[in-house]
Image 1 (cartoon, rainbow, N blue to C red):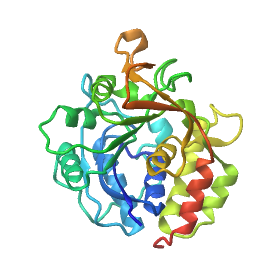
Image 2 (tube, rainbow, N blue to C red):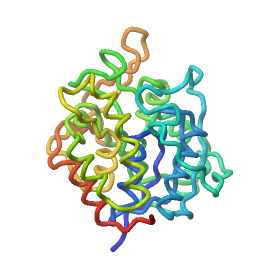
Image 3 (cartoon, one colour):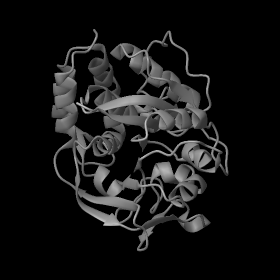
Length: 307
């Protein structure tokens, strides 16, 4: 089987960790690199979290590079500990990995990986700061497809009435990225808020042997606690895992809107995403088929994890 190469650009909090674990267990894809950005936590902590997770999984060859700490128009201001915990992973205190991060800048690693994998998919799970820098940097390679977890169109935002967190953190970067002619699919709140993991799913996760699924099961109560104010019962949204499944082709949109994506930068609507006609390379998913929680659990159950 030809495995689809994926580079993940992430701000490794709890749902990023779920997405990374899913991709490690998904037989149709191969993670060929990770770059980190500030968002849920700072970029250096996100890299440390990623390396710790990879060490638990026995994956010691995937390069992990630290990207932008600050956003284009403002400094990083501390992330979302109320959502993801002080360490980004629900406060479970994973041991530091023995392996260090890759010394290359995020833009360098993206360019290197894209030059080796012309069919590369880039999966962006955090603010788009690194990818905006890549768009503006001298580079030798072009990736095949970009999948972005971000934006809100017909759905309300989760930071303001309009704006989703990843876009709101660095709307200037998002505007640069969406101005490119890259083949781009957005997986916005319109669909990620419809895909959830509930208390019954957590019990099933807790029964999966292995260091990675057990770590995920320990993280999730913090995430579920945050969502107690969002959903009427105990469940959490699967934002990043759903985007990872779209990137892998494991789930597909049954309704997809094609059109140019613009980002509002004005104070009142800062970070709002709007779509208009006139683009053959950009689209956003409006509705999904299938269950992200079921796909996640099936893949985690099927892989043999180190204990």
